[in-house]
Image (tube, rainbow, N blue to C red; front, side, top):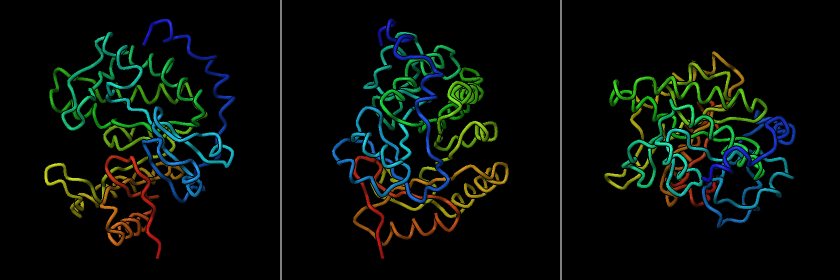
Length: 283
């Protein structure tokens, strides 16, 4: 990203916050995550909450006029090489190793204040100017993973992740923030976010066997206990789930929806790539 664009992309933070009021997500009973632009926007009118990729997505205006809460995808623990801010992050030596599970995506040093500065003053305003009303924060499991991987080299990564989310909330207090997992950070962030998404806690895609599999019951219950505790601490926080399953198996998908709802989660079930809309099976 050219330096002259970094701090001059947008008007003031205050004017952005005034421009983007958002309806309460508390009434949401269905949601979707979709990272492509091939589906028409009319396919999303039955959802209350929508997460789109900020580079590839259907038109937003029609959905906004219908009162949808639309969140823009924002990876904070790593950055993909096709994102506009990748070159700037590379120039500033913010990139660490490549994520072997997602080729072309690189871990980021979230402790570096230059990363926070770029997110707050360039990336976030750009997302809001497109018409998104809030953000979906991804890859926040990474700070803890790296700190456990090499405690000396990556000392302070968890705290860096906590500080980054708090800075987001402090600079943009009126937009909704959903965070994906990041369980080891959430005790410190429950009053800085609005929604918790738990990805792959009931089912996931096994890249080794190339099959969709259920999460072991013991692991599932452990995650549910954490979520119950978070809800006890802050009752207003909303809990969402995202699971992956074979779209050719509507019975299996319906079972996941029932299980997640029985535990107070707002579920969505799709394919791992999230590049197609998978409707919930109906009785």
